[in-house]
Length: 428
Ligand code: CMC
Image 1 (cartoon, helix red, strand yellow):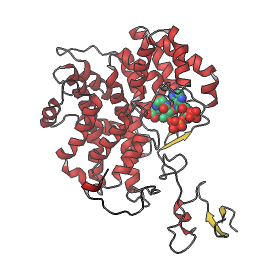
Image 2 (cartoon, protein in one colour):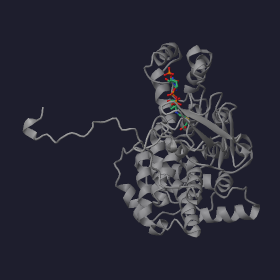
Image 3 (cartoon, helix red, strand yellow):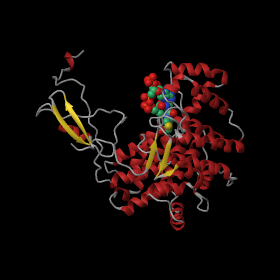
Image 4 (tube, rainbow, N blue to C red):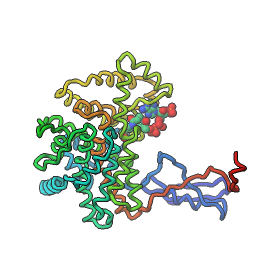
């Protein structure tokens, strides 16, 4: 009997099976041979939220949830957040290696020269209602980009894929900034190619009357936040990008699916939900009552808990430090005290300790974004800007993986058996 194998005895039939174990996994498809008879479809694994099912093999990001480790392509997140630029990290995620000086210059040059969007994109965006949620605007506009670049359908060609990658990374800040200006009724500010990636984005969002005084500390803080969000292996939005992309749709459509997934309050929308929660709590004296409600199952402590991290979220640690750098520039966000007190109480409370619930990346990021001047409903857009390189890297990896097939989960059918159509007069 092979050592790297799993022996299964099917007590329904008494038959024994030996399944190979590779990389700590058995293949679910190997279970299919386990049958009670010829009519039996074969054994399946039931895992509705992918709690214990690997959907792919990936070389992009490593997470050890118990130890609180996050690495992109092997590099610890702490080192990347301290030393790298966002475009450097994007290159690393996409190409697999850190760029040389020449490679980075070329990459930055290409990104810089694709920042403009077709003028019809601006018209299209003007069509959104004045109070449209910027995430809705973003996902609609990115999906619409596929109609501007029909060549993106040629996903087999590496050169075309590279061009769409450049287009996405250079145009998303432009679209995101337009979404910001739109919600405020301000005219769009066009990209300035003499500025850095972050500097240009900040300028497009905040420039008024041709002027914007850049604050380099805040720009670096934003850059660190984007780096911390750049990839997170098979999270909900990345799985959405992979799953939709597995149908061989163009990358703009696949990424807009990722943006839709990120929009939800249990995923990227949590940073917005944290601020709403802090507003609802209002004052420190209301915290104990709020915690009791959470423990009674009436709502969640937003910004706490994670599917993978069960000790701490390393990004939350780094973000807390960035928060203080930002508040030195902007003055303290008055909600910080409520957040700190919430964190203190929750970390001492049996309910949260038992369930291994710790602050996640979103607990402090919203406070920082707010101090920088972004409205609450815009926070998730900033998350999307950060996550974009990860989405594209994972999309490309999925396409190049020979094992990839169109995503198509199985189900356990629990509905009616066959029954006869009932005419209207005989119903009810
Ligand atoms: N507040 C209170 N209780 C919680 C929380 C929370 N934030 N998160 C989980 N629990 C409880 C949950 O009620 C359950 O308790 P019980 O065993 O008594 O039923 C237990 O902890 C396990 O929860 P779960 O829902 O099975 O855990 P999950 O892995 O499916 O959910 C999560 C992970 C992130 C969706 C969840 O922790 C949550 O809803 N957190 C709040 C939203 C949030 O901050 N999301 C951002 C995640 S990080 C950024 C990102 O990935 O986008």
